[in-house]
Length: 260
Image (cartoon, rainbow, N blue to C red; front, side, top):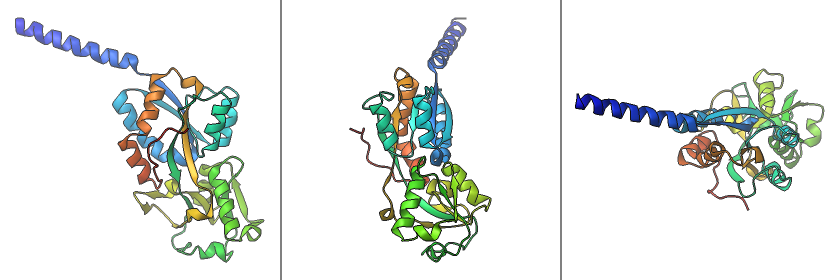
């Protein structure tokens, strides 16, 4: 009887701990740059399993997220595709000072869904042997700006005039190439590479000397200032586990440091 009482006490104590754990669990609303959708899905699953917190994420262009946050969208964390927008949100008083980190440095890729179409010299681009090229809107998407900078660096800006299919964000740009509405397009490596291998088609990795660095910053927004779950997610984003996942999708992960 005594043993049974002890067992019941242990079970009861365990149940109370579980209830307390779930009682503390919360939902984090995260705005995620379109290029980061794939690694975010993996990171979210692991974070939720480890912490019992829930991630509610929305994907889109960083420029549109900036406008939405300015207009009161209740996001708690922003994972931007650049470093300018998080910095501007800090200046606007809409992000928590000192919370900004660079979580990834993006890699631009010229990609086609057709195997063998793009070679190591990107000859199809240099020789203009394409009808349409997809590029994200440079006013909204940093990868779009990098695409136009690459064309300029190659002296191909005029040659591409009239051939550009403009995507609202990098996800739509990838879709244009995937569905062959454009033969080629500038996309993020994370959309077409996994564990260092091209998942489909053919590609040219754009030398980073041809465009400004695509430094992707995350920041805690004012709506998440008092959320332990939001702060926990930003910390998890800098963990060895998350960093390994980010690198597996073709990003470079910088040294850990909060932005000044």
